[in-house]
Amino acid sequence: MRIRGFFLFRRYTLLIFIILLLLFALVLMSLRAKQRKGVEFFDALLMEICSPFQKASTLVIKTVQGTFQQYVFLVNLEKENRMLKQKIAELQEENHRMKEMKLANDRLRQLLQFREKNSPSMIGAEVIGQDPSSWFKSVTIDKGEKDGVKKRMAVISPTGVIGQILKTAPHYATVLLITDYNSAIDSLVERTRAKAIVEGKGENRCQLKYLLRAEEVAVGDIVVTSGLDGNFPKGLMVGEIKKVDKKGHGVFQYAELVPSVDMTQLEEVFVIMEPLPPAPLQEEKGKKGKKTKK
Amino acid sequence: MRRIILSLLVGILFLILQTTWLSSFPIQRIRPDLLLIFTLYLAFLFPPIFGGLLAFLMGYLMDLFSGNALGFYTFSRPLVFFVAQFFKERFYLEGFSFQFLFAFVFGMLEGILIFILMNALQPLSLGNFVPLFFTFLLPQSFFTGLATPLLFWFFQKGSLLLFRQPEKGIMEKV
Image 1: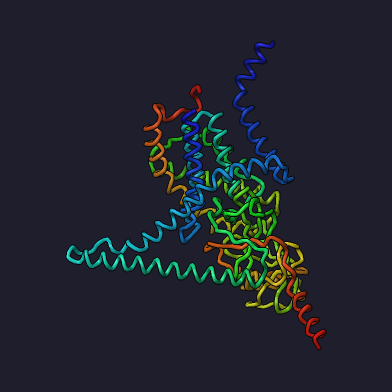
Image 2: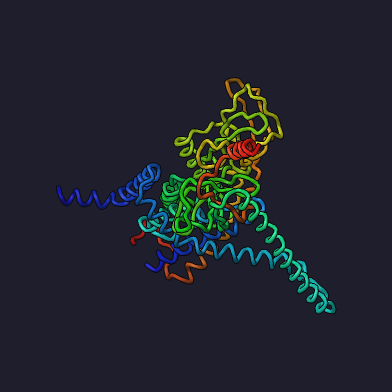
């Protein structure tokens, strides 16, 4: 009987292994849902191992792209003009490099101004990778727990909201973009002050959920953060309404918006280390100050 | 052991390419899933236990760098591996069209599975599936299918160079 049992076990070893492996994946899923420490540690460890390669790869790609853009049109030149063309190429390369430097300089100056204007408690980070799956929308940045980055922290750029920190490793973090299906941000329509939740719709689009039918919103209206979720400061631009639909039944209307930030072109971002004071409070303080002066 | 470590490194290399190089294309929908192709090839290269573990790790890595917080790929990739192993003996898989179809079907099936899992955990209306199907799932699976014969050819050449026995099937002993 024992021998028979042993043979039965051997016969079904593969099946048992498959079931166990898939069950383990499901257990991991449930552990992740409950945010257990053990899984987080393992995630952070693997991320630390892989991300430096990702960073190096991004650097190589950027360099190759620059070089390719520079030289691809110079391949089929006539022999007698080679010297001259080489000179042009060198000058072009220099010009391109200088243009790149100027663009980077402008961008960084804009970031610096934005940072100084808003809060000192922000940290700049570079995007080093995109989401490997097309189902989800996230990016990897080169700042992590060692730099003070924590889960749920807001990630922004001078042009608007980008997303929030989803996973962290000591030196890297994953940012869930506002266009992801799992993203939701409490916001309001700037003109009418109508409250709604901005949810991701994949690609470069979001939708406004729980926007009351009675609220008057129109195409072109700007949507800003409400500051109620505790992560994002009040008044940051989220996007512009591109479609409003009141045809359906129910209490709510449907509106679609395009984020103010192009999520496919992200290079540098800011992580807000602590919630900023909401904008109206600052205004009120200003008014109070004026009153006391009087 | 060398075979496993090398395969793991190749998997990590593909993950990095997928998150950096392929993402720099202007149209992100035209982005073949290199790791899915690699997982399908693992089904030809490895016996079920080692291959299953590798597919599990590939899925885990994919989840790690993705906005997916729960780990759908940790579940779907080993499943894809075992189903591919089951079918590899039953279908003729030589030539461009068969390899294309093989990866295309698996890409579509995995996409549908992910959608079902997403829907179960964060309900989306079914109306969301139709645009997703045409704008993302279909083109993504198509380009994954197109890239498969080329990558399979490279994998085959690579494994011939590195190992004496490039393919160990489900019926063979470890």
